[in-house]
Image (cartoon, rainbow, N blue to C red; front, side, top):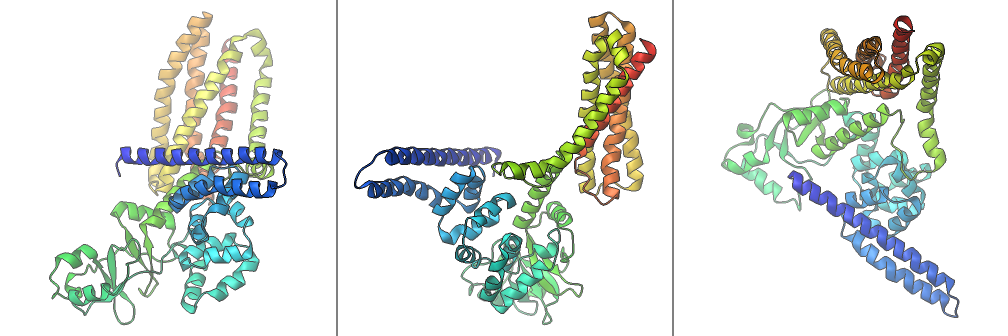
Length: 480
């Protein structure tokens, strides 16, 4: 899809959201007017108005993809969200629950009774059920397990036995397997027996009689080769295989690197147990990206933008508390130099520049390091070179932009010494920002923590306190 098509699709989705919001607004307005009127047939009038204004909204929803409905639900306040959710056809509930964020899913499930939840999740595949089980009420689970056949129950238990960041939790059990000792004509006849192939089927998995994976047969190879040829002659024996315990983000990188659509999942004995698909990997990459963005801001988890005040407070308080402590430390650093600021008022106007530029530079470095760590591009040897390189970049930027702001300070206040102090402080603070920008995420990664977790909060604290101390210290030493 081209960039113009993507932009056009996004615009259409936004227009649909605006239209649905307008329908909800009109519905509320008419209901308010109707309730203000009193008459013998008031209940009948209210009923007719309710159906009239919501029928158009339901027609709009029926024509949307589940992912688009999920987007709309996430963009609506809780009251309107539940109104729209009640209008969605019951046979689409499960697909939509899979698409919405965890926080929004929680609010939708809370609005459903036990029967509605079971009706929504029972049609789903085992790997899809595994994504939802943790969010379902515990009283629903026994009846859900009882509704599954033996194979589905085994597949669900298999998916649940793995951690959410492992391939086993995301693998798909729907796939087409063939033998290597049959002809392509036999394979074609076998495929014609299917009403439809599983989604994302770009290859067939070749197994022996013990279900050991021996190769794959891409569909386009099947079509362009003579039907008389044997599968063993045409198949690709060298296959990118993954194990259920593999880290999903590393597998997502492999999908990107090798342009994979599907790949087999095998156990330690090379028995085929499932497959992993590109749509699951795209979700992994998106979720990882969102998680890193939230972590850099000090948020613990994805937050429903229309969540209650208390839930939002709980999600944000920890790093705000840390930020408060670091801000207090920065204020005490300034307090150490109150006498210098009173003697030379220009220091008060210039010191935020030193701290601000340092924080910006540190965040740039941290963003690059976190990305490199996520891609496993940093080794012990390369880390030293990276540190030296970032310090060199900081030194160059400090001399150039510190020189510029030094000249500006000289021009504004007519003090050459103040300009030199400004240049020196800017350079030293950028060096501090580079040192911490590389060190903070690498230390967190070595400690087994998410290197993006609150990194922007920490680097800002370091560059604020350090910047104030360096600038005011140099000013006190050489000017005051």
